[in-house]
Length: 394
Ligand code: F0G
Image 1 (spheres, rainbow, N blue to C red):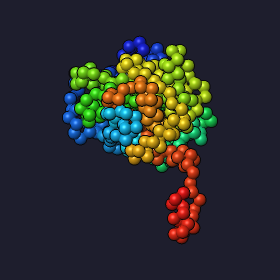
Image 2: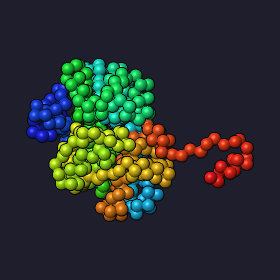
Image 3: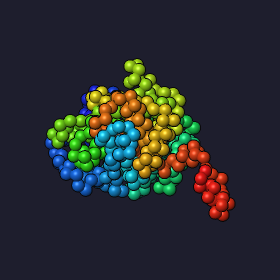
Image 4: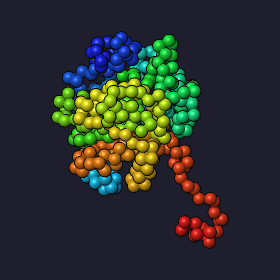
């Protein structure tokens, strides 16, 4: 097991504290796939079931993973999709998929002897890192775009005891500060640039296969900093390279219109250009300079997948559709996958009989304000039956 540069192939020890190669390329963990165990029997699905694929011992866990994989028949009917599933990552301990990355990377922080950890975040990474650091007894620092993270996530970071440092700027600027700070000080960086984060997140792929006992045709996933699409693709590739499965799914990444540098370049056939002032109602993916953009690109290219763009309006309406038709409440960034599905089905880009899994990444209660602000609430009514009955008919 070792670290390998995704750009130039240079190798480093698994215990070297570094996030990028000397050539500036990102690093990935190379697992010895001869030693992995085929545990995919569909039973007792939890993240640490796949420990032979993971690069750390379990040092800190809040019982993450094992999230529900729903067959969503009502949305299936609406879209005409026969085999439609949704993997609800909002069911993780802090309400997002970030917990998968944190159980592994905070375990690594402990193995490496760190006492402090830091991340820049649009909210979920902050909440998750704060929780796992609390459980592990580490001091955590979260750097956030001031005024631009959902209230539930902010509350989580505070209550789990992180030092919350809002900046006058966006996520990309927060991330620059964190990169510099973790170079200068003995603090472990826990953004998805940290290869151990992605190791945890790749288990989404393992769980999908374990539960379905087959590999889907399509995975539809929201893309912000582009770590998760990279991680899930790595998971599927490892299953294939280990000889456990024969095929891999198409990776379909969805970006929000105002923060869609990867999808814009993909769709327009132009070169990748960061977005200086990203803007979207899906604050979790309000990122203009995705760190893992090259790896996300490779995931789509290698898998035969692609990127799609959805508007804020499409995101909010997909959020309501999913909640009102399936009883699953997800935050706007997650609803981007549903919005993407609707768009792709309408354009017949994906076919009715293709087994498709949507990944929803965060719980709806993270960001309740967006629902309240875009709803019309009735004025309080007189507490008598007459006005009550009238109001019921409104
Ligand atoms: N969905 C949610 C709910 C997220 O919080 C994020 C990322 C994504 C999707 C996109 O995942 O960045 O791996 O492409 N949130 C990060 C954060 C940036 O700081 O919480 P990605």
